[in-house]
Image 1 (cartoon, rainbow, N blue to C red):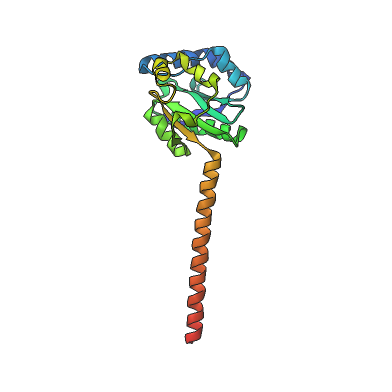
Image 2 (image 1 turned 90 degrees about the horizontal axis):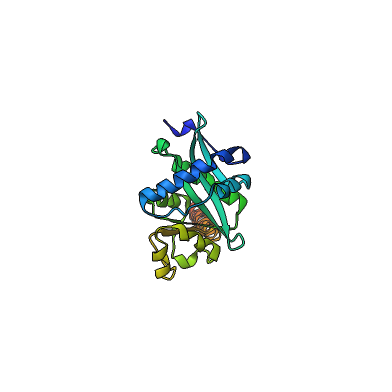
Length: 214
């Protein structure tokens, strides 16, 4: 079984029948790990599909294989790629990484100026996030939208979060800031341009010396 056996696409109305199965697996996964995936109803997941704010992976036989959806906070200033789940029978095929890359691409297309963040306890997800350009941050750098934090109430660690004044918890906070990435890119290009200019000046100086010596 390889990643070529799956179709990873933006979910639409034709996929709403998978919502209940996806939610059941989210709940089972959270229970097995003993840590949070904030629970969501089938109606909530189906609505994300209808809004074009979700990515679904289907095996070539039509079985749902994975899922992830977009949430927006603070009037669209922050975006979260939430609820990443892979059907247990299709794990170890590279689906989580492929889905994360696709939902990240969708988020950047729909919300190009938004900061994309995530809270996770999974080392594999942290690694994928790092590859996408996320950086570890403090909770204070995330959205302060109360509706977002209310979603943590269904997590088994919610008491820990509240007892620490929402400053930290079991999850690691990670953030992709497009403005910061653009700044880094511009600085890199400036360094490259400066280096190229310096090399050109050295080359011209050498040519002048050779011409003079000749």
